Amino acid sequence: MTRTFGLAEFLLILAAVRWTILLSLVAFVGGGIRAARLAKASTHWLRHTHASHAIAGGMPIEVAQQNLGHASLATTTVYVKTEEKRRMKAVKKFWEARAGR
Image 1: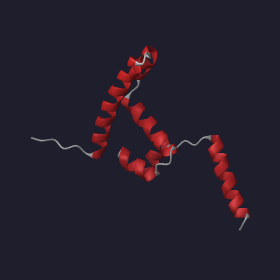
Image 2: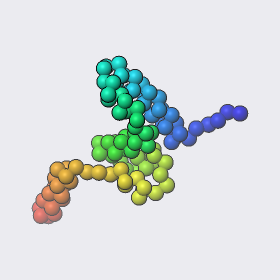
Image 3: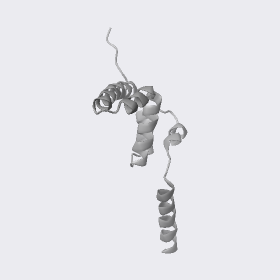
Image 4: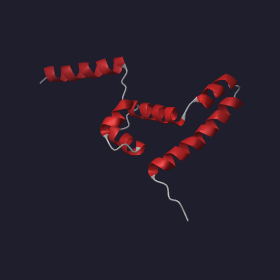
């Protein structure tokens, strides 16, 4: 019997393969301590880190929601973290646009 994988499962498998390659590279470059720290990291941490950085880098939250397999957008919003400087810049831009009307 052949097993088929959904997108979320496929992405987790791909992440695991990338994770193994990353650990090997870090260890090879002489980062034994860094490799040890990475080896302790969980797949959940890797998934959370990817989602946080992807959203911060401009990935639409709906795309992240679908990639993560979340039924609710509220679950995905946990990954949304904005830096204070970027947040203040956005607020300033909003109010300047409203003042210019």
